[in-house]
Amino acid sequence: MKKLVARLLGAFIVVMLVTLMAFLLSYLSPSDAAVHSFTSMGIAPTEEQLAAKRAELGLDQPFMVQYLQWIANVLHGDLGESYRNGAPVAETLFGAIPYTLALSFAAMALTLLLGVPIGLMCAQRQGGLFDHAMRAVTYLFNSMPSFFIALLLLYVFSVKLKMVGVLSTRNLSGIVLPTLALALPLTAWFSRQIRAYAIEQMSKPYVNGLRSRGVGEARILWVHVLRNISVPLLTLVGVSLGMLLGGSAIVESIFHWPGLGFESIEAIGHRDYPFIGAYALTMAVIYLVMNGIIDASYRFIDPRIKSEGIKKHHTRKTLKAQGGSHA
Image (cartoon, rainbow, N blue to C red; front, side, top):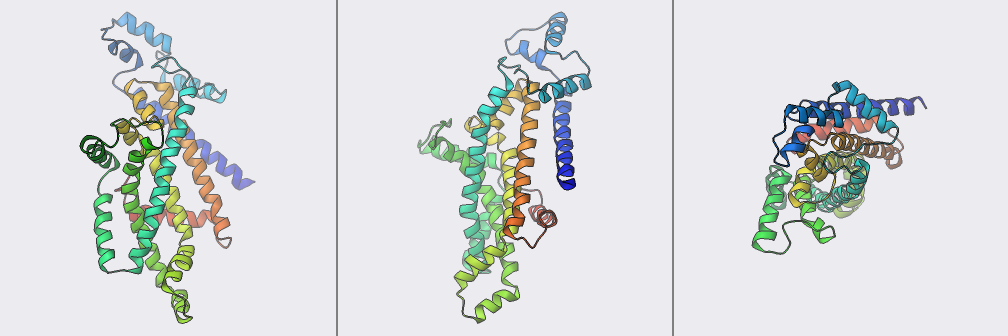
C-alpha cells in the first residue's frame, strides 16, 4: 500500500509539472490567443479590442491564477472550451485519442514484427554478410528522423507512383504510410538493441550446455535466448511506445492523420491554451499508465526479479545505448 501511494503521489507530481511547463511555455509565447483571433481574420485589432478579448478569455489574469483555475476545472471534469472553434476540448481530445493509439500500436507491432527477427538473425550470423548488411541498413534508417522518412514516402507513393493520396484517409489504407514513417527508424534502433542483447545471451554458459545436449541453433536462438531477453525486450517496448506517443505529432501533421499530435500542432498554431494543457495532461497520463503496465508485467514474466530494479537497470542501458539520437 505504501508503494502504491508513493507511486500515485509521484505520478500526480509528474502530471502537475508537465501541465505547468506546458502552460508556462504557452504563457511565454510572443503572441496570445486574443491577438491570433483577430489576425486569423485579417483584422488589425486596437488595444481596446485586445483588452476586451483577453478579459473574455481570462488571459488578463496572472499566470498562476490562470493555471490554478484550469486545474480546478480539470478536477471537476471540465477541460474547457477550445479557442479555435468554441467546441468542448474533451470532445476533440477523446475523438483524437483512438487515432493516435491506433497509429502508435500499429507502428509498435510492425517494429516488433521486423526488429526482433532481424536482431536475432544478426546475432546468429554475427560478423557475417547478413549482419554487416543489416547493420548498414539499420544505421542508415536510424540516422533519419521520422518526418524525413514521411516526406520520402509521400514523394514516392503519392507523387511518383500515385498509389495513395497525399492526405491520409481515416481507414486501414490511410494508416499504412504514417505507420511506416514511424516504424522504419524505430525498427532500425530496435533491431540493433535486440542484436546486442542476443549476443550477450549467446555467450552465457547455458547456451554451451544446450549445444552440448544437441539442441539445434534455431531452437536455442528462437526459444531460449528470446525467452531470456524478454525482460529487456519489454523495456524496449515501453521506451518505444513513449517515443511513438510523444514523437508522432509531426508525422500526423504531414499525413493529416487526425490524432492527438495533429490536433496539438493545430492548437499551438491557434494559441489554443485549453487544448494544449489538456493534450499535455492526457499524454502524461497515458505515458504513466503504459509505464505502470510495463512495470507490473515484469513480475509475470520472471517472478524471480523485482520489477522496479530490473526496469531501471534496463532502461538505463537502453537509453545509454540509444544515446538520444533517435529521440
